[in-house]
Length: 445
Image (cartoon, rainbow, N blue to C red; front, side, top):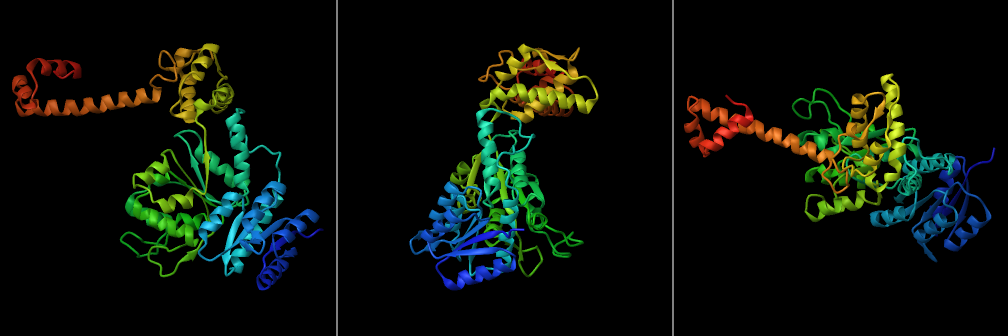
């Protein structure tokens, strides 16, 4: 059986020897180059499963070599060796297409982890395989996103997934994880806006028994749970500033300190994040740290809203209705041409999630397994410029809420004046006619 082969590019003999010995003990054959020219010559002569390159080389940079490999050998994982503290250099390498990076002085355990991950990725090479049947749609934006997912899965770079609510950001994050070298490890998703502020540090980094009131036993944090895998931070813009500082340190140092512990713990976690907000605007407004933004937004992947891929709506509805029928055990329903046209002309502020909810409701209420346009309960004109159903629902909920407050205040004023309507109206600053109208509208006798 042929041994896997690695190309080592470094002008320092001691570093080359260290890497050759370490990779040799991992049962890899190695070839060494002192500069970019020699590295290109080796790449032209032999196939490789991995490339490790220093950033500073006598006749160029490792970044140039990364770009060359991306162009000529796109399936070859390449990792950058950078000087300690040169995180900006490492980030530039990741943006150029490097798989990962390791800093000098080289930590051998970290190096072995990197090499193992790169070789696992190499063994998964299936460039013609579609990303996943869960990512529905054949429109150009979806085809482009599938290609981006496959490319990002070949990297360890942090990815910022932008997109509107309901567009499928978590599914995209999960697919990046599953297609990559960490696919066999854990995928931990957390909604940053759903964690109480006072519990955030404990949730992210864990705590020791007795470290604070209520800590009755040791607890593992999200970073520890995701060790070796991927941590997906959904709605990352909702993190308070004090937690942003701690997250930044965890990402930079690749280590976390459990609440109540004395020492930091090394963690190997890939960070993916998402938010429906504009992170750049949040930075400009002072609500999100700029340094954290640059660490998270190494590569941005935009998930297109449903209204930008209307040609997918027919396929989406067919598959969703078939799934509803399978789950309910009832016959499948079909959309009329008029109903489908209504959907294609609807703006979908809630995106795919809104379409799913809309079809589930229509499927439940329709007759004769036929969904008509009226079953969808869309705005009359169905125009993308019209107020959306989600917006109308919000308005209706707001009206209900305001009516509840109005009812409470009027009843309170009536009780305090022993149901003297004139006195209650004066107390509320209303005319008697206005008071009478409100009593009738709210059904208060």
